[in-house]
Image (cartoon, rainbow, N blue to C red):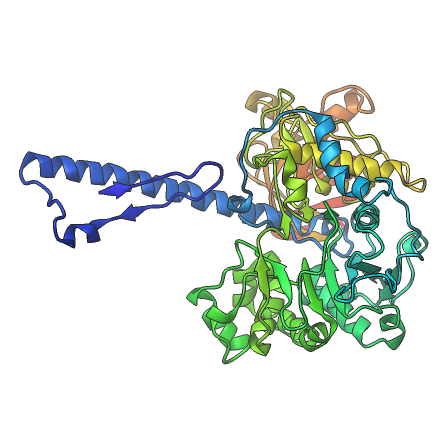
Length: 584
């Protein structure tokens, strides 16, 4: 008998061929003759269904991994160091409680503010940067209180700076909600920035600065800027001045796109650190050959499905781990087999392999954080079930409130990747789907933090509408003086090779995945001449308008790209036989 049960929600399909029951005494045997053929047909249909579902699941996983890999280098197109992107997400199977959700916005407010009201503090509780740089609490607190220090690892890019400001606002809010005896102690933003120079945010967010990898050093790591994280922690631990600000015995490592939903207690003990369960980080025998090269003697069964964030661990444990975390991350990145196998989560594997090598076993928590997207469904009470909302996925909706679809930018879109070079604007429009509490809470949380920040910069970036742009019909592409000549051509982008326009209309390839291009309509800031010489090219959540130039013979030789939002300009040059037709 073939059972193919489906759990409700996003639960995985389970297949159980219960042939072993046929061996039990009293078990019914398959009948002979025609009924046997019927059984074979049923088995064939069931197995065919399982195979089809397996293929669908495989391609869904491939989409998530490919999309995350594409996005990790967004700022690199501008020729600058890439930001600390790790667009990772645990399997949405972990997002439980798929009950009916009503659309009462006020109820979401009530739930999100409940902890603050209970603690008798305002929901927009403000604490200055200097007030929270050290631990709080006093002699009246319980003797078993174990405060921890929040360490926000970051780089000083526009992309991470605005996220840091939003993150810090909600961290302060939840610290206040936890009261004076809560275990959320001090806060430090650990910033990799040039040669350790301040970046101007230290007056708003308690910050220390360490040296970041130079462009030449990052080139050795294939411009994987996440390598700055273990390098930053290593520098901090070696600095008595920086460590003097940390008076707690425990460290919580956080990321810029973490939003605290409620006060986070210290879930760790001195002997047992805690970390989040990443669904795609489960080791298998497939990883053993790479592990053998990096950490001989470590077995894949000992490597836990964790990364360095979110995690809470004793300071002594962090000191013990950091050197190997840094060294193993470097060794993995310089190993072609490991680099191909681990991709954008490679530094996380460096941490988990280092912990296994040192015999450090974490308690692995599924409800430490949630990583939802537009397809996720949870009750509005999720703010009391998880501690952190990690907005690693974009929320993409049609204006009728339905999810836009896989690998699609929505007519309504809230995605951090839109704001790689510019701050998001204040007062973002709420999502058209008010029944899903996830994007509704996130949009309102962004708006709350931005509204409370008097220093939030003015921006030219779009809000939650206008990011979706459609390909033109084949006939329109063929009739366009520029787009008609692009298929098959190759280009540089800010000196990076290479941008390839495929023979399929509207499709281009970048080193980080596929891009979509199409025609601009006349109107607004694009006149008739602009519409005839310009196309749009969208990738990694960014929108770009490319205006092309020709040589004396009328050949397309270069373009200037203007990014929508911050109007950053990038030059591209035509390649023929891999050689630029004009000087780079």
